[in-house]
Length: 247
Image 1 (tube, one colour):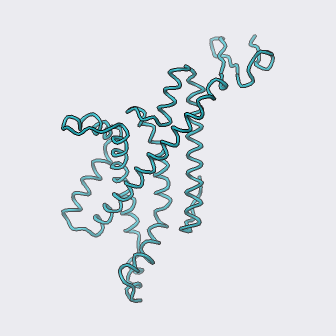
Image 2 (image 1 turned 90 degrees about the vertical axis):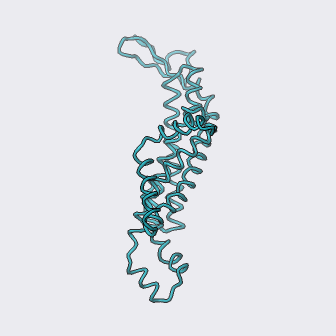
Image 3 (image 1 turned 135 degrees about the vertical axis):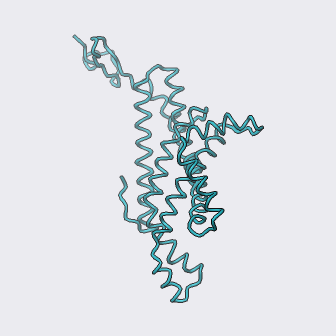
């Protein structure tokens, strides 16, 4: 018979007893791993910063690439398509491996953070190029013609016609991609970047409480997703009047 935790006066209230299939007693001790929570939250903030920087730089690359594909001449369009084709059709982890392990063969040394940031930025730029190109192509030509008829300058047309349309069309997709990038920062642990997953692995190596450590890590990632989604949803509604769901 398995004794319940609440029946033992010496047991910790945070401990939970379960019975595996073989009949042995497994004790989940979340009280022991809560001391790692502040360290995990620091790792979570590092993950958010990495994702934000890579997303912002990738957004600029994507804007340049989308503009080139839409309005550029033939040679630049071919180069952009080659860039998008390579980074969109190879694993992001392999791209970072190349930056971190292969570039030193050519005398280019990158720190783990630099390799991860550059790899995530280049990968994001490829996908954001296609996302923003779709936004450019979704703009009705009739709206541009109407702006020219009203005497709008090119700058006024971009500000009052093109930009509002593209932002409203692309904001949900861009928001989703940022959240995906936030979760994707977990691969940085492979290269020794002390973000959330790396700190969870270190804590697990010390405590050997795998279930507790990684379930708490998963909950933190879920929390990051909820917080980021709520902020992006609120920002889009207030600033761009984008009608999108938070989750």
